Amino acid sequence: MSKRLVSAVLLPGVSGLQVSAARRLSLADRRVVWTPQAGIVADVLRGPARMALRRPRADDDVDRLESLRSCPAALALPLHSSQGRGALLFAHPRPGFFDSERAAVLQAVGLHVEVLLAAAVRNRELQAEKKRLTDLEEEARKRMARDLHDGPTQVMASIAMRANYARRLMQRDRKAAAVELEQLEEMARQTTKEIRAMLYTLRPLILESHGLVAALAQLADKMNDTHGVNVVVEAAADAADGVDPALQGVAFYVAEEALNNARKHAAAERIRLRLERRGGALVLEVRDDGVGFNVGAVDATYSQRGSLGMVNMRERAELVGGSLRVESAEGRGTAVTLTLPARPPAPAA
Image 1 (cartoon, rainbow, N blue to C red):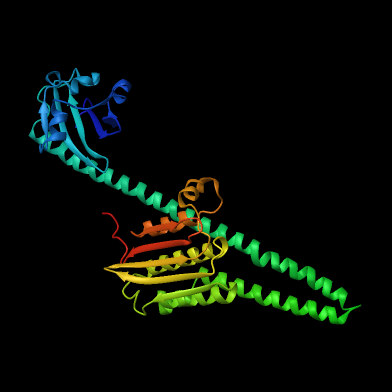
Image 2: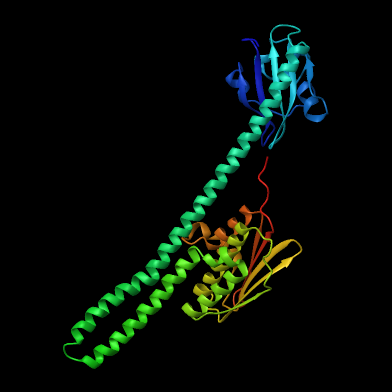
């Protein structure tokens, strides 16, 4: 349009409008933070005006920008963004530069800038969501590595050592060796159960073939069989009917994580897993009679801890438009309540 055109994108910041992008503005002007009180920028910020045109020297707000003081023509356009209402500011050293044709072109530019800003915000949101998902996957891998190290890996090492001991024992005491081999067999069977349980939680095929209610019932059975934990499932057969499969997967993950937390840390004798519909929402509650804990104290120390179980459950719920509530007190057990919509939220336009 003109090489002498001065322009600035003004977006709301903490203390007022800030220059987020500019052309032909001095460095000092780019650092200006201001709250328009009277003038063309204030007009488009506060009113329904689609455009404001005025001489800079008659405009207290615009006059704050030294680069515009020599420009007798200025034009301001409203700019809507996720940060709030901002403005596009143009100025030119030629009087009367902003005729109707140029103003129309700049209005079209303003609409294009709004689209670009919305796309940039959406891109940041997508990148943040991608990072959260990546972090969740990384935490899941770390948890699996810890579980393998603390369980099957150590047991297999013990089996190897005891098998070597049994082999040597056979030469001098066959009866004692037979007892040792029976114990080794039981250890191997138990380890096989634990590995199968881990594989099940990674990809429960029953969740895909028979749905969430059947998957939770099988999860409870495996907890009972593998770890001797009394898990009771309360759910109507059609409790998850019509719920998006991806959301059923989130509910299963939270149930499995909450059950493992109760098994490992709560010393619970009984865990109740309830699934029901409340209005249009799917509600999952995992309640144990274990030792309980101070929720606030645990939340405050998660940044220093290696395990992020509750954080991961909460983030997975929020990613699909749901919520997670954890209630507990020392000596009073723990209740984890997950609330999910029947369908995931539609992506932002």
